[in-house]
Amino acid sequence: MKKNIGFLLLLLSYNLLAQQEQASGEVSGFNFKRHRLTVVMANSHVQKVVHEQTSFFIIPTWGLDYDYFFTRRFALGIKHDIKLSDFEIEPESDEIIQRTYPICTSIIASGKVWKELIIFGGPGYEYSLKSRNFFQAVVGMEYGFELKEDLELSINLSYENKQQYYSAWMFGFGMSKYVGRKR
Image 1 (cartoon, helix red, strand yellow):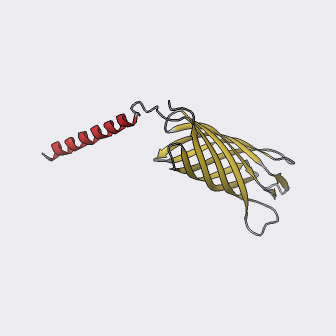
Image 2 (spheres, helix red, strand yellow):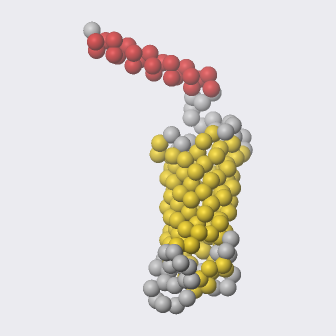
């Protein structure tokens, strides 16, 4: 008898869920906006900086990201950020490398792993005006809070590794806008 009641409750909950999806027009799972633009305001914690009293240096950072969602859970995108400071790093090779307002560009693959938690990662490149450029690898995560149907506020945490030269942690907030028509 208990098995029959459990099965009936499971069937009823599935039926209610299906009716809710039909009412919102999302039966096929493709009724969503696929383009997302995000402006990020963050602080980068850079290690191996010369002439600093601490082991890291905090630099204000702005970013602009674009994502294209293939499904509700998987996207590819491009991530840009600029660190708003000049600084010098000293890698293990004992040479001092000047970084002047470095601009980082990365190609990112991302996936929603739980509710609005997104894990992302990918390769990129860091450009500096007066010095050499570095290949970088980026990994991170963000959690989004829906403000309106097309607006989202997110908390971001990412790690950038610039080959053997230096690395940086970035923590910040993003404001996202979903654009395009629903498909």
